Amino acid sequence: MRLRLTPREDSFYELFSDSANNLVTASRLLSELISDDSEREAIAEKLRVCEHVGDEHTHVIMRRLNETFITPFDREDIYRLAGTLDDVMDAMEAAADLVVLYQIKQLPRDVVQQVAVLERAAEITAEAMPRLRSMRDLTEYWIEINRLENQADQIYRRLLAHLFSGEYDSLSVLKLKDVIEQLEEAADAFERVANTIESIAVKES
Amino acid sequence: MRLRLTPREDSFYELFSDSANNLVTASRLLSELISDDSEREAIAEKLRVCEHVGDEHTHVIMRRLNETFITPFDREDIYRLAGTLDDVMDAMEAAADLVVLYQIKQLPRDVVQQVAVLERAAEITAEAMPRLRSMRDLTEYWIEINRLENQADQIYRRLLAHLFSGEYDSLSVLKLKDVIEQLEEAADAFERVANTIESIAVKES
Amino acid sequence: MRLRLTPREDSFYELFSDSANNLVTASRLLSELISDDSEREAIAEKLRVCEHVGDEHTHVIMRRLNETFITPFDREDIYRLAGTLDDVMDAMEAAADLVVLYQIKQLPRDVVQQVAVLERAAEITAEAMPRLRSMRDLTEYWIEINRLENQADQIYRRLLAHLFSGEYDSLSVLKLKDVIEQLEEAADAFERVANTIESIAVKES
Image 1 (cartoon, rainbow over the protein chains, first blue to last red):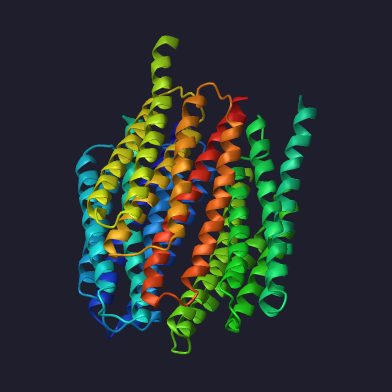
Image 2 (cartoon, rainbow over the protein chains, first blue to last red):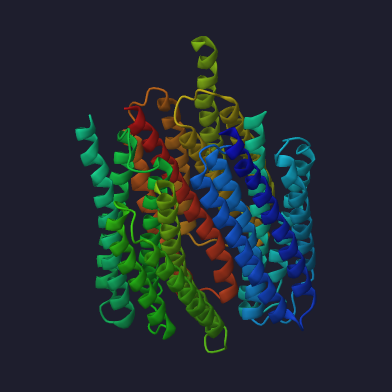
């Protein structure tokens, strides 16, 4: 019996790693998209593919979760972890999509910084995933995610103030605010991923 | 003992069917409301009644859930299913409410299509509910909900682009965007209903 | 064994009381902030401190939850109660933050009423928390929270209509709408707190 359960347990770790690596790919595409205004449609299309891959991961995790009697950690935690990873992807894809849909030519300069923070958050999340197995050395990851979330928050607030500084007409404010809010939502979702992982780790300790 | 549990189990199926049928009524009212600009206040009032009925269903489901020791499926799934059905209703009622509150005279033509998708989603959701008992023949329902959600998404994106095309002043954009976003939220919530039902079905299989 | 579990159980009641009392403090600061436009930055800073204290409470509750084998009520309910109390705080802090960030000079008069409802909701929530232990005399609290939520909803809708009445330019509408929506979100979150407590009480009865 144990023999049959072990490979299933393992597959959760791998699926979460795949999901997080997919976020790294997506965050890099997002970074390209905002710095290059000639290839936006093509890059947004690639991000859409990433999002479908992510949906597929989530779907497999949920299916496996429902089929597996014994799971490596709490069912609700697996459910939450898959859900929050999915939230990050959705927010990043939505931001890219809106840039194209609204035909935004010029993004405020701080958006580059906002996306750089997401890229870094994706990288350290992907690096942390394999450590779920041993539940060791996760403290640095939480500290860094928290630092990044605070940084994202400051950039976001600065961007909001900038939008209303008088430089933009109200339709531009509406468009840019939508994009910036999706990027902030992605940063928040990265923090929820970290909180879920912390909650798992505490139970295991 | 079994005898006393059975009627309780049954009541969940009936309550979910009632909830979904209530969404059919609400989606038809919404369709009336957007095509007829003379009776809007009266129709919005009827939708408000629907929403109260829906709240009552949710409340009864939650109460029953908390009182029942053995449930026909996972407690968390029942909780989620009731919650997502409630989300659909809230979004539809909010959309109707905003049309009246903002005194919107003319809605963009594609909003009719957006609401037609919701009407269809409500119908197939209500048709699927009785099949929760046997857990059979649900595949068509998922495929169709996914198709509808993709369609809703395309209409939504086309509407967003249209709003910013220059035809509308910024206050009108703000008002219409609120309505259109609530309708999109309703379509998303229908998909979450279908995902929850899928999750229940996988566990039962 | 029982002896060792009792102090842990007790600590949940105390932590929830602390959390709710912190919301009372925050709602009073919010009330000060909107009536006094000279001290806004200083008051918003105090609210930020409140929010950090709230985060700390949530964190301690989650940690205790994950470490405790037997909890006074359902794990998921404890999780939800901590989460919804946190939602109230986040929404109130965000509203205050936006007033300062957007440098809003004059708020519509009804915002005072909107915040007064939040203050009252915070007070009765804090009063109800110690009664979680006996699960008695909670009915009045639910009735009053529901009444307050309906009142908040009416004020919110009146404010929305007022924003679009023609008195405000579109950038002001955008700013004020953000603030008003956060306050409405706080009222909604108070209702979710009450619903969670009701769900706990039904199970215990």
